[in-house]
Length: 178
Image (cartoon, rainbow, N blue to C red; front, side, top):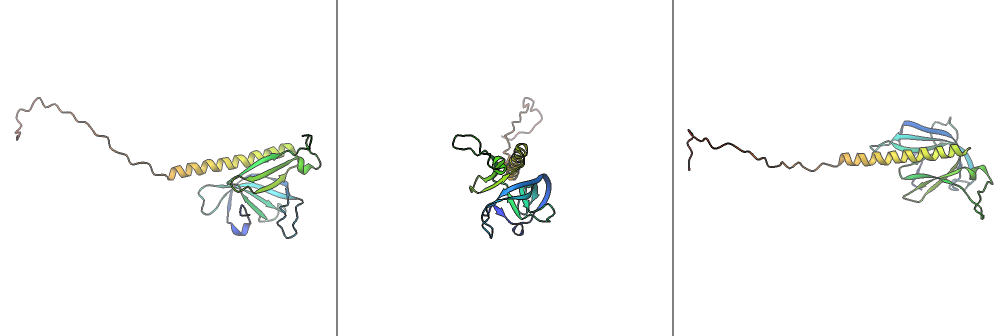
């Protein structure tokens, strides 16, 4: 999945840390063991400079531990959205089998339908992460639009005709050739 970019494929410089905390991440099953279980990961929502982009890009960095110097996964959030997931049973009541399911949110790519699944330790924390991610993505989109508009050349200014009026009633003393 090219929306998940490992660190060796991308250079970035963190400009601002927006949010960081331990989250639980559902395994994608794409690792060497095909593991789809929930794993605790240190997650950081940051704004970063990336070569080739004028705007600061929101990234979600996940690491096995906060002491690890580089993230294990980098999710570029440029076309992503975070949504809360409240799983329901057949009778439409919430499923509370595990706290991971209860406090789940998904990071979904609007363009490619890729998905990453996370959960938090509290409802307030889940809503806070969703809000922070979506606000960062919204701000990035706004910055991109403004940047594109600033690079669009303005139409040329066409001079308006100027009307000059002169008082020609007193022409005495002028040699006019007719």
